[in-house]
Length: 95
Image (tube, rainbow, N blue to C red; front, side):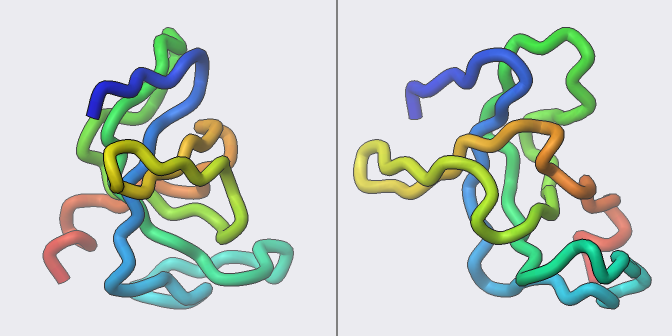
């Protein structure tokens, strides 16, 4: 993929095998977070100096967040970092 996000955006590859409930593996989110939560892997990050994301991070965000794009027959999401709700810790990735 030859795509570089700008500013505080990230390119995300969706992890479709599961979604996250509001109370899965110890993660409790308030009722203000409505809808399905989606997991995705960070493929690229913008040039924002204060980014907390790293390439390879697994993230959680609300459905209908970001801009879906298709590059070389692959589907990705361009998302603002502020729309990402959490980065999944390594200990949750293994379970």
